Length: 109
Figure 1 (spheres, rainbow, N blue to C red):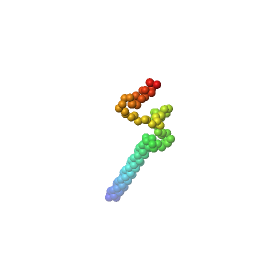
Figure 2: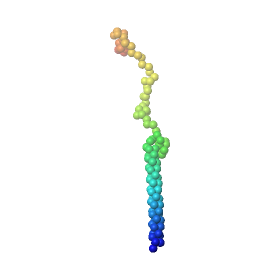
Figure 3: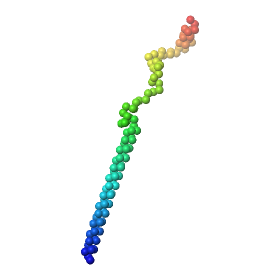
Figure 4: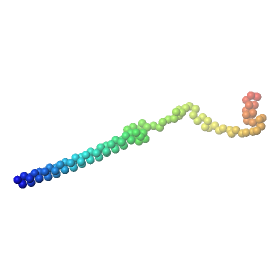
């Protein structure tokens, strides 16, 4: 009669050990899956950041170009660059002023 009790105790002990081993395996598997998922999410986030930045474009290296200004193709650009302006001089005499001299040259020839 005591042999059956010992066998039952041994069986119970073996089942408990098996149960603990299965629980430990499942916990390790769950932890491994969580780590793997976190790594995948980090890779996805990094890839998204790389795609979002046009300066570090991996997929289309030649597609990024500096935008042109709206007036880059104007024909008469920088025309006044070479001309030097004569400084206006102020003379308090109305007959000798630059305006009066230009006026006389233009209209009193």
